[in-house]
Amino acid sequence: MRFLQALSFLALWRAASADLLGDIESALEKAVDCASCHTLLTPLQTLAHLGNDDFVDTIVTICETFKLEDSDVCAGAVGEQGPILAHALREISATGQTATKFCDAVFGLCAPPAVNAFSVPFPKAAPAVPRAFASTGKAPFQVVHISDVHIDRSYTTGADANCSKPICCRNFADETGTPTEPAGPNGNSKCDSPIVLADSMLAAVRQFAPEAKFTLFTGDVVEGAIWLVNKTEVTGDLEAFNAQMASELHTAVYPVVGNHDSAPVNSFPRNTTDTTIDSQWVFDTQSAGWEQFVGSAAASQVDHISGSYSAVVEGMNLRIISVNTQYWYKQNFWLYDSDTQQPDPNGLLAFVVQELQAAEDAGQRAFIIGHMPMGKQDALNDQSNYYDQIVQRYKNTIAAQFFGHSHKDQFEIAYSNYSDQTASTATSIALVAPALTPTSGNPAFKIYDVDPDTFEIMDSRVYFTNITAPNFQSSTPQWKLLYSARATYGPLVTPALAASAPLDPAFWHNLTEVFAADASAFALFNTLLSRGGDVGACDADCQAAAVCDLRAMRAENNCDKPKPGLSFKRADSRRSVGESDTCEGTGIAHIFKNLVNMNGFGDHFKHVRRSERMPRSVLE
Ligand SMILES: *[C@@H]1O[C@H](CO)[C@@H](O)[C@H](O)[C@H]1NC(C)=O
Ligand SMILES: *[C@@H]1O[C@H](CO)[C@@H](O)[C@H](O)[C@H]1NC(C)=O
Ligand SMILES: *[C@@H]1O[C@H](CO)[C@@H](O)[C@H](O)[C@H]1NC(C)=O
Ligand SMILES: *[C@@H]1O[C@H](CO)[C@@H](O)[C@H](O)[C@H]1NC(C)=O
Ligand SMILES: *[C@@H]1O[C@H](CO)[C@@H](O)[C@H](O)[C@H]1NC(C)=O
Ligand SMILES: *[C@@H]1O[C@H](CO)[C@@H](O)[C@H](O)[C@H]1NC(C)=O
Image 1 (cartoon, helix red, strand yellow):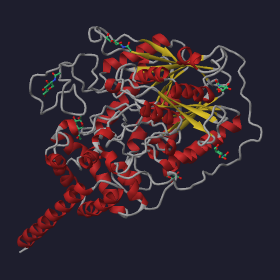
Image 2: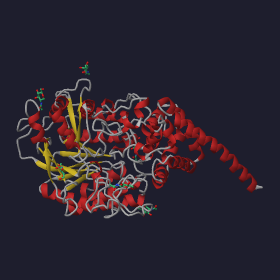
Image 3: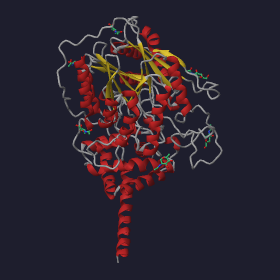
Image 4: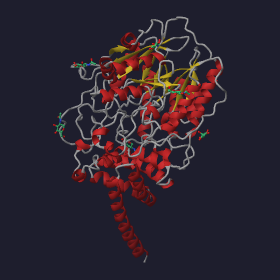
């Protein structure tokens, strides 16, 4: 009897699920804009209510049927991130603003909604007379900035660098043929970093900055095999790189948590979310691993403040505030599980305010460090706006900000008035470090010269190793200076940068004026972006968009806004220098975006060729 009941239930369920599958496929086919994306959410919600397993199985089937990725990538990426999306879909209305944000993040089919007005509370008004930080002309000290190491501890010399996965140079179970392009020992542009490449960079840091006071590491330890990552591997990777930095660097280190430094990738639930998938283990691991660098008080903050901390540099009037930007990150899908807008997930905006107020009260200057720069389209517009309010309030205290994530050598300027962008309204500068991983250009890091009185940046030098140099694989990678920002850009602005002047927000603004007006100066910037390693063509429109983005520390002001309808076709999703990437790598959103990107290809819908898929993003 029970068996029969179970059988008929199963038959019913199968019938319902066949209908549901049809509904989803037809809604996917029609999903071309924001309204049709909202429509698509209804059958997806029905699927999510059947449970995480049904949700994952169905999406994996769709991913495999349309050959969006290899089977193992479909199964792994959807298996890991699918339950987070299913959780969100079960909690929200298909028609509300959170659903619009979901359609932006997951499908790229909605533009971000207008910013929800919110005034960040400040304990005190800005002082009427800001404290003056004057240089006495002392010799600058050095600070190192490394980022996005993405070390693949399963990198295998001789494995195929030409593969069908998001990253190669590993022995994948389903790749049994003879390698067409055997990986060299030191790295490849289709693979994340071998350990020896990281070793060679840390040795170059010792060589080129022997007297450096400290190193900023702006996150992303873990490789991009996001369909395979798990807690065990990520914990091991984080511990191994902490040990590598401790043994091979001669300086203090101030690290941050990156979006890849968790499993599933990008997974950082709010502290009020009821889930078994938490990320406290990331904070526990880094609290233990970073104590040797940042001290016990800051290490305790890492544990209790979602991976963030603040520390005063020994013997300096400088506070470093390290913030876990993943709670402001569009691809952290835990942020879409409530129709009530939550301005400050886990209280991290309040934490930054508290630490900046402490710095202001103590007469200190501050460096803010984080993984994701706040001006790109993968920063949530709401939180980017609120963050900008903090930057404006404490502009006199913040000497500079440091990020990674884009893998590119970039900067972002904040303005007191984004409608009036001039040297005199430029209030803060964020410097973005290039990546070690060779997937988006030549491996690189930066060394800054910093004024010991003002903590302003006097120079920024990029060092790199050339992965296409003929001897790259035959010896330890050789590193050398690529350029000095002061020497290269200082003479370009009018008037030319004075010998004692810092590279301050006004200077960077004036440089964007040069980039906007002078095609050859812009072409130089465009080449340096990837350290000459992955230079994209950039026409006049792209140049204008790139300049616009350099002037947008506030995400609502960047020029990456998705256009409705046709703009979601493949041609528009290709990355170029002028626009940030529209996909986050090969996660589930990448898969969903490819699915809707196929719409309008008509007959092609069921015959997808690999070449029609979105390129791998560098937004890692
Ligand atoms: C890469 O592999 C594909 C097939 O797997 C092959 O067609 C192509 O020629 C290879 N490319 C190189 C550069 O060896
Ligand atoms: C975690 O990932 C590693 C590396 O891919 C794998 O060897 C291990 O079996 C995985 N562990 C679990 C519990 O899945
Ligand atoms: C949880 O988040 C709230 C803000 O949403 C914050 O006030 C609180 O301190 C956080 N608690 C922990 C333990 O992180
Ligand atoms: C910002 O600049 C615009 C354009 O110059 C101007 O109209 C506006 O009044 C300015 N806003 C503030 C608050 O100064
Ligand atoms: C890297 O090496 C290649 C091959 O020698 C050369 O063409 C290229 O200009 C080098 N790149 C840089 C940035 O020096
Ligand atoms: C920026 O340019 C303006 C004029 O265009 C000039 O007055 C100012 O001194 C420049 N500032 C810096 C820091 O170069």
